[in-house]
Image 1 (cartoon, rainbow, N blue to C red):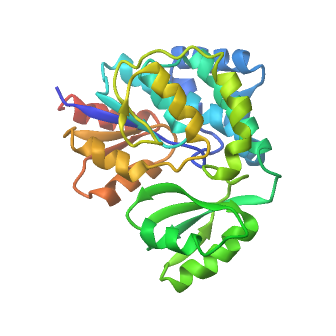
Image 2: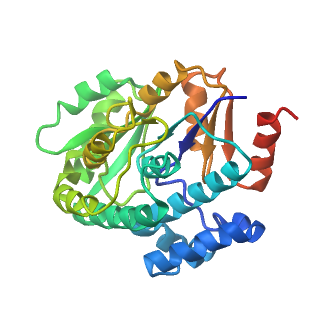
Length: 311
């Protein structure tokens, strides 16, 4: 039997229409979506299927929408007898990874990520914080550049793959960093369409309220290892999962390192489960010989199943 690792995408992968085809293809998935609307006490399904894009992009909608789509696909994969041996998620995707590993129920994860989204939005004044992708520099060079800026908060946020690192901080700080990093040889510094300075120290103010909410959630030991964003190491024990989720709000996402550590376990493929193909692309940049799949609709699901079952 082939061994696969599941990867779950984070914020930014949402698109209007996401999940609709899955909903129409399966009564089981319909129930999953209908239950999610009940749990969240809002018509998330309608926002996902019809938009508008601005409403879907709001953090408190985007986060549960991505989680729901990923878990719908994960449910379909389980029904086809595909079990991952390990999981990883990118930022918000870590919550999908935890649900897939049996550490948190979907019923508790949905309001948890909606609350997380709301607190992240409120942590820093709207429009004053942002993120940018830096292309063509390593983390040491970027860090050296950022350390030249003392009057603004700006941090490494996502260590995605060789030559693609995201920085996060105040709008003013990002502007200052742009000039410094271009002078150090960055090919491009691209502003990201996000509503706040996520995974930076500016998120620390959301910490207390989030910890309080997290304390009400049942976290179990995971059935399979989850490679945590904060440590890039496998975690299964519930107390450690909780501690890392709190730190994750304001710590960098060590995605490249997580993938390199997972590659040492010699899985047959990395399978992105959810909307989009961002993570599969990042994995290819870490090692282009790695077999990857992006399962996001019934066609890509069937392609993956053909490979998995050796048809």
